[in-house]
Length: 346
Ligand SMILES: [Zn+2]
Ligand SMILES: [Zn+2]
Image (cartoon, rainbow, N blue to C red; front, side, top):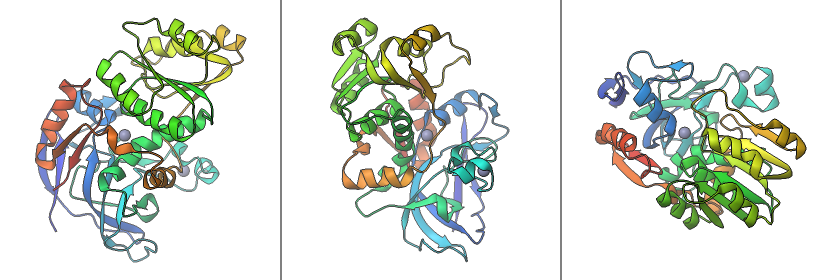
């Protein structure tokens, strides 16, 4: 067994290195990685070397959205066998803190998350991971779909925290990967009207293809007026911001219905954003936030397997392992064109 990894070395640069095949602890499995999705966070580290307080020090392996095949199991592994195909939930949590015990393990302060410094990611041939964070893929779910479970889990968590229900009207700001998986999740939960807002025409077309009932190009149309007219002046039950722009965060309160829910998903460039809380109070509206996701890998896999969610439609670009740097550079330089790029590892 030979393991190779691609490291980011400084910003906008990558090198391949031979690395050791990881040694398994009793409850670990060894996975031969097959597909890795490139996430916005990976691209951000590649370009800037940090996200907030998380700073890349030295050469660093990116990638946290992945699926592959189990090739070895630790001595105490009970539920997986060699040959199983699995997708990997990237966060290893302590299991002992109050958050882990409550089942809100995404809030565990001691999480070790793939490709969040100092923990390396999965852009390599072999990775070890605890058995309980590896989820078996049914025969009708491909490795590519398995790699997309991670971003889909974010969309499922956003719509779950936003309590999107049958018959709801939802506004989604942003048509990046997370905006689109949020759209798919809203549809699967039975929302009747899904209004999607962005400034990129090609992405809005994609949103329409994936089931948006109305799309608004904020460059050409007055967003607030248009949503007013689309909702009979009432606004949306749930408004989900995935764009992370100052203007979209501000507009959430203008388009939410009285008593409605706003969910903030996108990260704004500046930590502080001005927001009209008086208007929110006048509507008795709620602002909620999400951090990653929890307990949703089985849900996402079932939804893909049953056909409720067709997530593979969001893949726009595929690269092989040797061209990982080209893939990242393409995503950096063609952000509006790429919805989701994936790397096939040999
Ligand atoms: Zn991701
Ligand atoms: Zn914990």
